[in-house]
Image 1 (cartoon, rainbow, N blue to C red):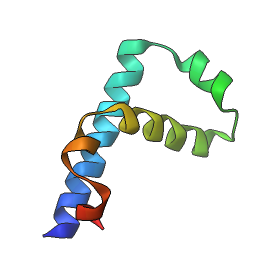
Image 2 (image 1 turned 90 degrees about the horizontal axis):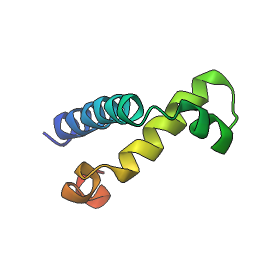
Image 3 (image 1 turned 45 degrees about the horizontal axis):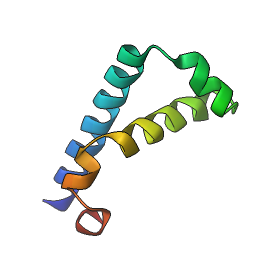
Length: 65
């Protein structure tokens, strides 16, 4: 059950981050903030967007892990 919730939350964060980046349209400002290799860049984008998304406040990390 916990694993299922984790997958759903991670998927939601990923979807939100895609929408967030699309709506804001600020890939340039993201790349100015962080300039890592392309594969870690997406992870940074997801991390930043998921930290700003309300789902983090709904499910606390303690409940997930």
